[in-house]
Length: 545
Image (cartoon, rainbow, N blue to C red; front, side, top):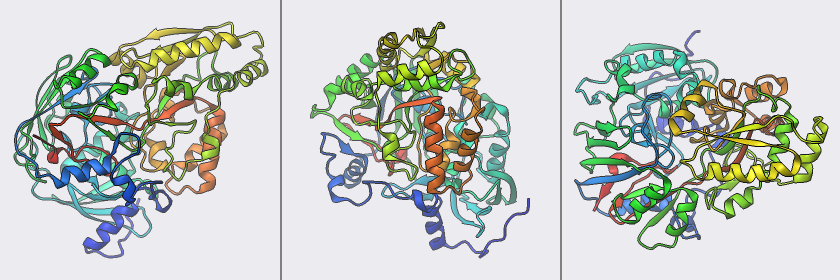
């Protein structure tokens, strides 16, 4: 494939910033509903929590102090098996934020602005996208070093791109989002990419694509993590925690902190107690544990923007869920409002049936309305030939470390009895759930696992989503669903394409979002966390008192 010609062979700083904004998600996807420069949002959410933008502004005004240790909590064992190109858990649900945080151990080609929805330079210092959108030339900084001391060049980017061809990463966010068909190294600090198609998710990919060290890449699973990020991976124990130390040669400036210490806690309650007693400085918490922190003046509750989903997902190739009417029936048994009232999903989560947050151009408020209708579920089962209920039990994989998972399973079991559905629970530990998930070997359905992550654009979300592809759910049998999904992932989707996708997604019912997570991070008085526009920590700017 020929590389498209550039309108201008020079790198222009003004064009760089303009392109950075436009590359987010296409013109329609740039706006965030209710976000931006609204004065009201910079002071309070009106619900006892502080918006991430206000927390960032407050942190920026206080003079940060150098030195000290940021003590963080992790709610599950650290598993490095899927790194570096697969996400594997969050700070609240797994231990892997200690290893997977963007800009932490692993560097990024571009990063999100702290003040607005716009990409900014990081390893890549300037770029130009061809007029036809099919290719891109960019230059990287010449002052970036791996933690081993080796200089970072375009050869390292090429190495990482080559690794994504390995089937090991085929279900990963980075691999699923990868738009690069070919690359050409011009010199150590300049290269060209040719895209598979005119692409509007270039910068999402560049932000998620971790800069890995080719000399130690194959040792990551054994605990040797060498990156170009703000902190060096010093030591870890998969059941105790991890220690990271500031990287003196970090290209954006030495971090304010000396160290980050992650400690793993056995369960959600232990994690909350550790925060309450000052053992750790901050943490996300499970919905039930978070309740007592909202009105606790000792902690700053920072409300983040909606990303990812808390879903129920199906294996559609296994009986008795091959008939979509059975899956649809289960969807009408979900009492999402009750789940929120009883703290099984987050206090501020967006309840709905679609995977897109309310700021997405693909969002449809009418289609998204939660529907709880037991009579409708019973009628669908009758249409599917099961007027007296299903003869075969439905196995639910639950994740006990996330308290809402077994709780919602129990409520669904109660609802199922009323319409003739029998559910059996198969609890799994986090590592087992992760392994079986990526192998596509979970049981009939699973609750609250497998589809978190930033949704900067509809196209990016479809490409990132492991459970919208075939590898996990084993569902590519309906031609309308396949056509609707492909139309949304080609980088040039229209409002009609968004509507078609949402209708097909609801009809196929292989995934039932319970809510779209609006995370809240509870932060004690010692820590000052600077965040980007979407709420991710800017690690080299975090400080402790």
